[in-house]
Amino acid sequence: MLRVIDADVACSRPRYAIEVFMGDYIDRGPDTRSTLDVLVERSRRGNAVFLKGNHEAFLVRVFEDPSLFEDWIAVGGTQTLMSYGLAPPDLKRNDPASILRDLIRAMPTEHLEFLDNLRLSFSCGDFFFVHAGVRPGVPLADQTERDLLWIREEFLQSDEQFGKYIVHGHTPVRNAEFLTNRVNIDTGAYATGNLTLMSIQGSRMLAV
Image 1 (cartoon, helix red, strand yellow):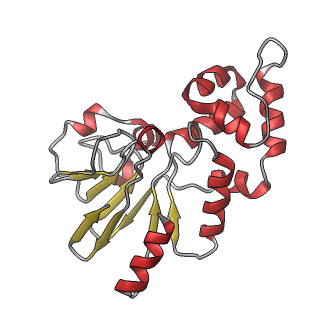
Image 2 (cartoon, rainbow, N blue to C red; image 1 turned 180 degrees about the vertical axis):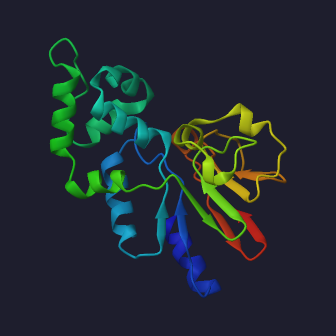
């Protein structure tokens, strides 16, 4: 997908290209570590915005509160552990706090810094980029972190015009879903292998 982006930019030659990554870079997939390596390297170009997803937020919470460890494992944490060379968790032999300390030691400093620096949202022109969505009736500037990362039905069922056009993911759909107030580009890559890219140039929006 990054090669597709580079080829498109080389062909269309925009005055300035901004890349926005929508979160959920970790868990479930087979190689979280390599994914973060790629994104850290991409960040050095200086024109990319990396949004926080609920999976990144949840891992940070687990680091702070190991009692949530089993909940993290249930949503794909085992794959993340294994990508850093750790064995699948055996809670009969190791307590969660010990496993998490091993994970922090195994994670490169630049990975931890990357997770710490993720943004909750990004606004550009008429577009507002966010991982999950926004709460209807609340100004964009006043949205809570929980809603930006976790909201589903209240947002998905709303036909409200939010002041900007919302670009989001979080809730998988078969194909990118364009509506009058939002577009959902989450096509469930971890399960389907289908990662969706959206290109915005002027008033033109295209998802592939």
